[in-house]
Image (cartoon, rainbow, N blue to C red; front, side, top):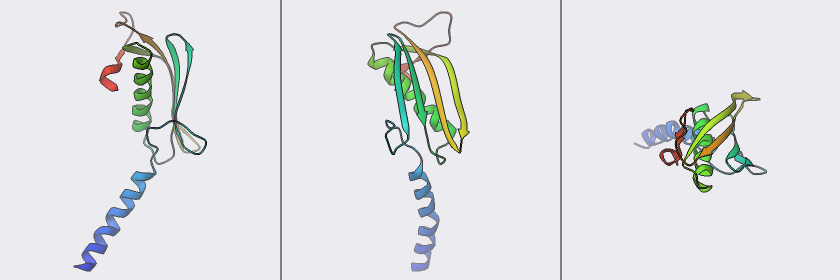
Length: 120
């Protein structure tokens, strides 16, 4: 029975360690990866998410969109469009994504939009 427990622990532990190494949704700091953003006008923002090599590209996109949605709602808007997207390729094995977004109070007619309330 003891060998079975050790074997099971040997299988589960590496998965837990690798999962714990992925970048979390957090503000980028001096020693941590994460999101950063800045406002370029009243309704436009640049959102960047930098991750480590253990973070899948899908998570980088998810976290970038979550931050964009948060900024949209925080600034009194409901919808946003992605004006420009750079990244999701790895630079030195570190995936990152930079989104330029524009926010709207109502759905824009001539652009693809994202409802921030469905993401955040």
